[in-house]
View 1 (cartoon, rainbow, N blue to C red):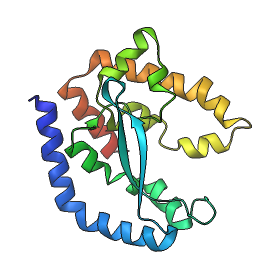
View 2: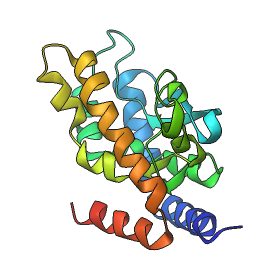
View 3: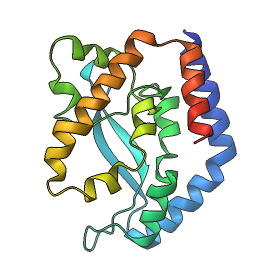
Length: 181
């Protein structure tokens, strides 16, 4: 077992012990706000294998729009806390490329497919750069085109850079950047 995996297990257990009560409370509020508490979605994981990611639900079931509570959860990234379970289960790591929906990372070709050798992560340099990705996309006249032509290729570039320079020290540096952002 690698030091990275041991760190992931220890960190996720400690995170769940410290934030477990908060996750349960946020899930309860989400249930009353949206009609469901947990959002589960297939994502592309290591080696292109799909797994189910866990998030706190932010969309209202009645109309499919983000609630005021959901906007707060997304802005604060608190909706991501249940992914500590994905880390504990070994589907994700604390640091690595953010897992994407099918149709992006699984469609990469050539050298870019090296990204699929990495376990997806809760945080990454690309996630830090695009912390406000949702707001950035709302500013665009064609958000999907902007994502496909600008954001996604930049994320791929940054994740390949991580692939070639990954180390436990680099993970600690990325975590530090996240904590000080």
